[in-house]
Length: 264
Image 1 (cartoon, rainbow, N blue to C red):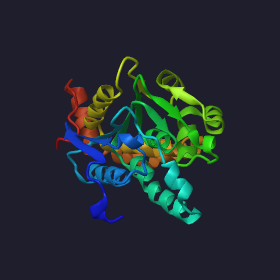
Image 2 (cartoon, rainbow, N blue to C red):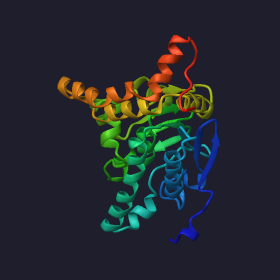
Image 3 (cartoon, helix red, strand yellow):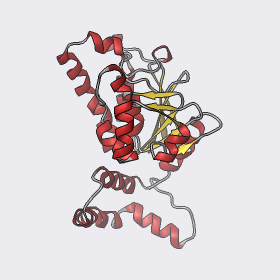
């Protein structure tokens, strides 16, 4: 497929209040990551988040009542081992882009987040589940094993015992259970996840991006030994105390006002 063949509306992009919102928009395929244009649209949006200093947070969500159904089974079943490996290798950059960014990425999950769609949600820094949200590590239902960085993200969020249950038995988790287990960070029990996710994203956009980035870096290495934790803080905290963000934050504290990060 050439670049001219990639649908331009597979991912809808909105920018407001320092937040870029990326909406997967292939509802006929339940927003599969393998739908033409979805991967490319997500990567383009996340690249813009990194390049544009006015964009300070992102939301990933899905249109048509689904977050993301993961891979396309028909395409995967027809592909050779080498073709599947090539697709998976390409997709690794999506999870790296979310994990390695200093800026926070919020997932607004309405409807199913299955398979690699679960991986997409779990890779985000903050997950908001709506009333219709359903999470499932569905791989073993079709004789596959989890991918989409789930061996990293799922145990980090819910612990190994719960991850084992989801991975082995492909159990479905609703929004309330996701919140209770740590798979989700907030739950819109009576409606869509998106308005609540937008509130969180605006809060993130007003926050200290460098500090968020160091928190993300530390959590990627967790759990740490005491020596690793002390080493990490010595490698990272002094630079933050010398940063413009800290100067603004401390000035705001003493002046009894809200800090204005990112406005210098």
